[in-house]
Image 1 (tube, rainbow, N blue to C red):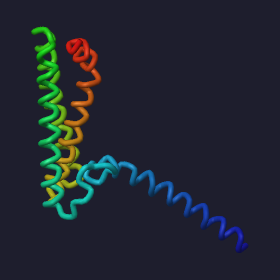
Image 2 (image 1 turned 180 degrees about the vertical axis):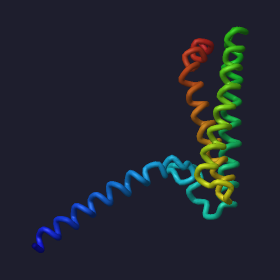
Image 3 (image 1 turned 60 degrees about the vertical axis):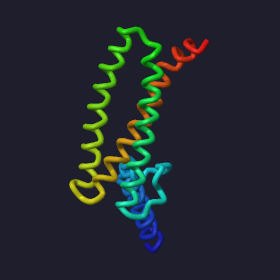
Image 4 (image 1 turned 90 degrees about the horizontal axis):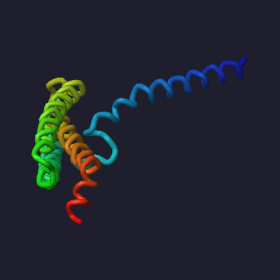
Length: 143
């Protein structure tokens, strides 16, 4: 009997850990807490907000620089296409970050830093995407 109870407890514990792990998996989507975020050392909401604001500003400046390089090598029609796509991306980014920060913090003090964390991450992703899409054209223009 004792062995059966131990087995039941072990099964219950294993199930609980799996359930808890699956429940917490979406927590990593919260960019403020994600491993590798640039502001892990921040201890307060104010520090986190300041850090992510600076990180976002740097990411935004890098995006603007990359965008300007790409614009210079494109035909007028391709520049128009890029501008239209970029405007759509800006709307996507803003809506995504508003939804994400609201979902996690719903008006609380962490909503501002969460929004900035999302803006920073999405902006870095956009820069990476532009490099992947237009990098070959930039290399051609250099040669």
